[in-house]
Amino acid sequence: MSDGRAWRGNVKARLYERVRERGYDSLTAFAEARPTASLVELAEELGPNDIAGVQVFSGLLGEAEQHKQVTRLVRSMLVRMLFQSLPEGWPSVMDDATRGEIALALGTWTAYTPETHKERVKQARAALRATPPPPGWRPLGPDDELLLTLLPDEEV
Image (tube, rainbow, N blue to C red; front, side, top):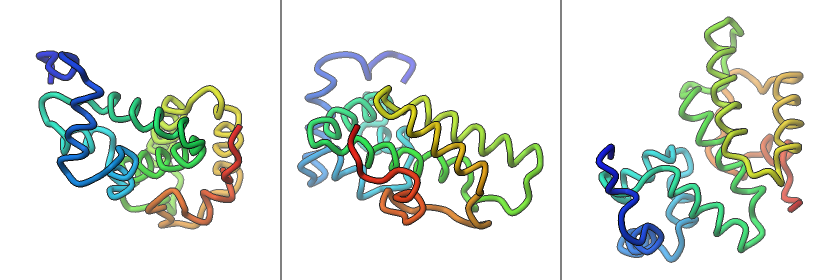
């Protein structure tokens, strides 16, 4: 993708055309059918050479704002980051390597969090560190019970 094709033409139109070609009426529906896929994986499925992960995120955020479901998107982004960084689930042993993997997942999650939700995410991160989930915990979607406890559906 280094040739810049992802940024040529009408990116939004291309993104939604690809989503409709796959039988979905929204980018959110497409992404929710793949709740553990990374943004890069979603982009590659939609167009390996002309859609970027950040474009997928931008579209998802726009839809979430429109439908007042930003908190759900924030939870879904944590699922994607944890699945990518901790494919075996929450570690049972906290050593430097696992702390680094957790920090990477939580840091990336925070980077993809809209300003309106940064404080809530900061509190959720603190809660995860103070009371870690059980070993092996791996949320498979934004409706995971623990995630709903950390970030309930209250739009800010």
